[in-house]
Image (cartoon, rainbow, N blue to C red; front, top):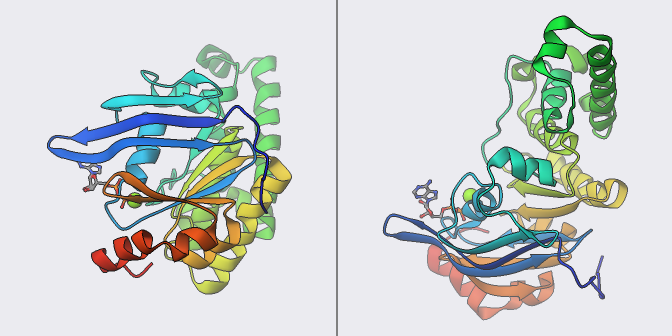
Length: 267
Ligand SMILES: Nc1ncnc2c1ncn2[C@@H]1O[C@H](COP(=O)(O)OP(=O)(O)O)[C@@H](O)[C@H]1O
Ligand SMILES: [Mg+2]
C-alpha cells in the first residue's frame, strides 16, 4: 500500500502549527501533509499532542501559531461546523453519540451540514422537506450498510445506548462518513476492542479508503493496526514530530524507541 508519487497539492497541511494551553505547549511548530487517498498514522506516547492535533484541525481548540490548510485554503478562524462542511470529519477518543437516538437517526443528524431545508420546512412538513428526509435516510442506510449486519436491519431502529461498545465505535465512524468528508480523522478507533474486533476494524479502515476514497489520519496505539493500515507514520513526542516514514523505518528509529521507553508506554 505505498503511494510513491503523491500529487503536488496536499489535501491537508499544517505549517508551524503550535497550540499552547497556558504554560503548556501541546503542539510545537508542527509541519505535516496528508495527500488525497492516503492513510497516515499518528503515533506517540500519551500526552504527545495527538488529540490536540485533531482538535486544532477541527477547530475545537485554537492554534496559537501557524496555519492549517485544507485543499489549499486556511481553516484558521473557521468554527467547527464550517470545518465539517469543508470536508473533514472525526471520531473521538471517547465515543460521542446521541445515546437516545436510534442508529439511523444518529447518521441522519450528522448529515445536517449537507442539507438544504430550513427549520420552517421541517415545521410545515413541506413536500421538499419530506423528499430530503427520505434522501437523508437512504444515505444513512447506505453508510450503515458498510458495517454489514452489525448496524443494519433491526439495528436501524435501536437506540444507540443499547449497542455494544464495539458497535458504538462503528456507529461513530458511520456518523463521520455521513458528513460526506474527504478526510476522516480517527482517534484511537480500536481502543478497548478485543483482538477480533480490532482486526475487523483494521480491515474496515483500509476499505474506507479503497471503496469510499477517503483520506484517513488515524491516531493509534495498537502497533499491529498501525503496521497494517499505514502508508506513512508520523511520530509525535512533546508536541514535536520526531520521526516520519513508513512503518518499518519508523519502528526501527532509535529516537522513536527512546520516546516510548522513556515514557514507559506499552505501545
Ligand atoms: N483543553 C486542554 N486544556 C489544557 N491542557 C490540555 C488540553 N488538551 C490537552 N491538554 C494537554 O496537552 C497535552 C497533549 O494532550 P493530548 O493532545 O490529549 O495528547 P495525546 O492525545 O497525544 O495523548 C497533555 O499534556 C494534555 O494534558
Ligand atoms: Mg489522545
